[in-house]
Length: 386
Image (cartoon, rainbow, N blue to C red; front, side, top):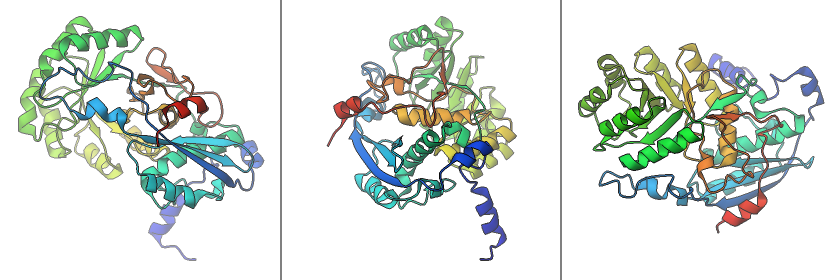
């Protein structure tokens, strides 16, 4: 088969999963590893009481923050023909049919032949493919005796910074959250804001009472244009230890003007590499909030590294398996240095036996192979829904 230039470069960019591992590990790898069984569970694990919002916040309260934890997600477990298992976790609200299509497509296939360089892994439904990616890295890592981060190019950080988090809060409640964060050894707090919130007095109160605590305020693009947000940005430009996330839509001309008119660092939740490159060229960004599957996140971080722009890993307030996949992906970079949204410790249960415990604002990368976690089957049974 003759490849044109674009096809050749695309093929060359899809490096084999085992290529970066030591020769001794590659030599010991099996020629194939058939996936003999796939199990799935639908679960709902509530947030711990009082961790999300102030219910008396007022008319600008984002009602999605009150009940997002009631949206189910799936836990999956692959078993290889060697008896080794690998676990994964979908995002919230994925369809049963999406998961079923991917289970049917992957069952009986060779885990070593799955094209992990493709975002969809060659599966029929890309929306749940990232959960299968986690499970395959976990399965292969346990089989080979290496960590997931090693298969993503090597562990560049042995611990990953994480943030404390909350939603929209009244001033008294926000002070209590800050106290909890500081008591837990956290150096960073992220909380939600929306257009119309009293964000100026809230930040002044945090700065007055907790001057060592750095902050991120996520506005979720609730201001619709530069003109609407600029007066707020100027009022917040008080030398606080502050990053503002997504205050306005991703019109990068507006973002560049924000950076020119204020000294606050701004963080963009970036959709893709093309948008990242445009933001870098336009000098419109200070920090990237990135997501995507494990391999894609590591690749996007390489772009940020080249531009000397720091990154954090975003999330949808997940459970332990998904969060640990974030930790491994972040550990395989040098640019993911901002406190990331790995927040399963705020759930009633992380479904991995409580092993996901931040210490002084960091999560240590597990020493065990694969993702380094095991499924708590009793907890899965407790939180399983039909």
